[in-house]
Each structure stands twice: as structure tokens, then as C-alpha cells.
Image (cartoon, rainbow, N blue to C red; front, side, top):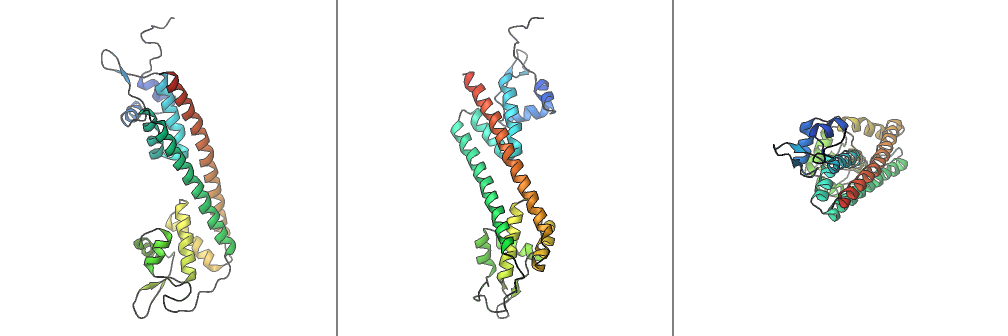
Length: 246
């Protein structure tokens, strides 16, 4: 059966949706969000899509596992408003974040290798070696003081109180534990997952749970990097398709 030249290449919302196990509403939402180019319309006002829209949807769905929904959306919006340089900048930033996360993981592993049966320094004032108040420590980690207090309630850090001022004082082991907590939080671990790991670190000898967590972190970073490659291939195909259509 010959195709009608007036409808050749036309795709309905349901055609795009079925290919990826989506609802037609999801396809319309993606168009409204700028993830897909604007749809064509029939004489009766029904949406019609083309192979270019199918390629855009495939590119977006491939970008999500490596970059996340928000970043993938920003990439597609930039491409669809004909601003590939902005799209490439966003992709570069996402890759830079992955590299930073790899460096964070390396820092955790380096901290683990340096761990030993560290003795807590003898109580002293906040100017003693390793002693820090909440503000400077929060600044060093790039977090809010309220976050450190939340970690204290969760048992991740156990600062002493300065007997003269009542201020929290973080000794060397507290600074170490706060650093590990911060790095593990960046790795996606919840406070209730981190608490037993920090407890093992303090015990100096029971590090297997933390080692297992780091192996899982390695695997997730590797999967993210691989997903970024798959997303890049689909994005390149979409860019080529869009360019050929101009």
C-alpha cells in the first residue's frame, strides 16, 4: 500500500510513546518542556510528529541515565533553540562533575588508607592541633553549620564542648569523620547508611562495610560514565538529523 505523500513520515503521539513505554501525556509534557521540538498540527488541530521528534526523544531518554533528568532537559532545550554551544557547555559541566566525583572517591580511599587506631587528641581549647569551631569546619567542607549539627544528632560527629564558652569543638578525629561523612553524602549515601560506616572507622579495624560501599560507588560511577557515552551517541545522531533537516 502506497503512503499518502501528505502524511508520509508523520507520527502520532502514541507512536512515539509506544516505542519507549511512555504515555502519550508524557510525550506532550516533553514537548511542552522544550525537550522535543514543537509538533506540527493537522488541519483539525491534532499533533503530528516526525522522525526528528523520535530522534529527539531517543536522545533525551539516553541522556537521562548519565546526566540526570534536569541536566538532560537543559541540554535538549539548548539544542532545540538552536544553541548547540550552550548544550555542549552543559555536557562539559556534567562530565566535570563526574570527574570531581571520581576525585572525591579517590579522596575517600586515600583517607581510608591513612586510617589507623587514631587516638583522639587530649582535650584542649579550640586553638589546639585539630581543634575547630563549627563555622570554620563548615566553611572548610563547603556546607552549612546546621548540616554539621544535623550530623551530630545522627551520631556522625561527636564534638566536645569548650568548657569556657560552651561552643562545639571538633578535634582531629571529628574533622576526619566529618570529611568522610561529607564525601559519602556526595556519593549518594543516606545518613543512616553512613552512621555505621563512621562507627567502623572509629573502631579502627572494622572497615569491610566501608570498603563494600566504595566498591558500589566505583560501580555506579562506571555505569554513569558508560551511560554518558551512550547519551552522547544519541545526542550526536539527533544533532546530525536536525542539521540535515535544515
